[in-house]
Image 1 (cartoon, rainbow, N blue to C red):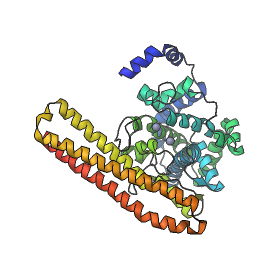
Image 2: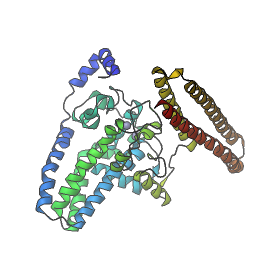
Image 3: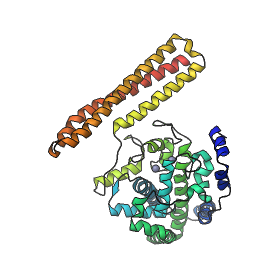
Image 4: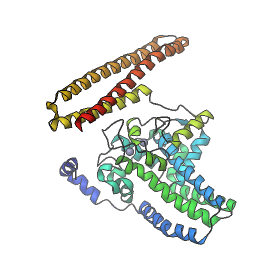
Length: 403
Ligand SMILES: [Zn+2]
Ligand SMILES: [Zn+2]
């Protein structure tokens, strides 16, 4: 048990006892326990005794995508983070996909998720706090009515305004039964395999989608890298991105939560961002929110400095600081850090100048201001990239002398 956990337990015994005595959350608990057990028996039996046609597998694949993206592009990036604006066709398509996932109403899901971001890792306020371990953050938090899981919806005023979402919340049971039954029956009838569609595109798809989503709250807070921040447990993990429609880049997401991308580099596997981008090209989505490149680089380089300094400190504790080489490295890194801060100050001044100019210039000249500033921003961006590169090189050299 970690020291913080121990001290929290001493300070908050009452809160802890509320957690220990939380009543069973009956309906979700039955669904979450029964569906994997049923799948474990029914899926192998079905595959063993029936030959499954291509049509059924295609329905399975389509339902996996619709349900998964309904959660990632819909519940998560659209409703919870307002990372973009969607045409009603897209919004409703994703709403139905998210409903098919059986992961609670948009209200419950988003209220909990916004709390998760606000109080990340807090044992008493984050509804799926990774500080309570794998089981709790993966599935345990839904099996009982924990205090952190009770929402008053004060943090989702933008969503409670929407009539259709209010309807979904009020009649949530009917929504999941009707959508799942009608859609599965229609597909089953279409491909002539109702039982196969129910077992594979219904049951197996539901269980896989559940646990792939749950991975984000559990494994993505445990395994992976932290290129942008180490102030919380969220990690970037490419393997998990494959299973979660791109949500595996969770360290970036926790630092820049309103960005419509989680895999921010163009080459990072994030099908959700590609879907949103395609929708915007087709005129079905707009106002895609992005963090500017310099801010992202700033966070990355800041983390690199932190890593180098931690390493230096460790080496210092091991007695390496007696060597002249080591002292030279320390000075070099201090000088790099000063230069980096000077670039950041330059960048912040430029940003303030742009805001000021936009206030005072005539509207017709705003494009000219943008044009003028773009070149200056680019030169600052490339300076930040250079800081990152030279820091990388220093870190490599540091590893060599400490081997
Ligand atoms: Zn998280
Ligand atoms: Zn989020």
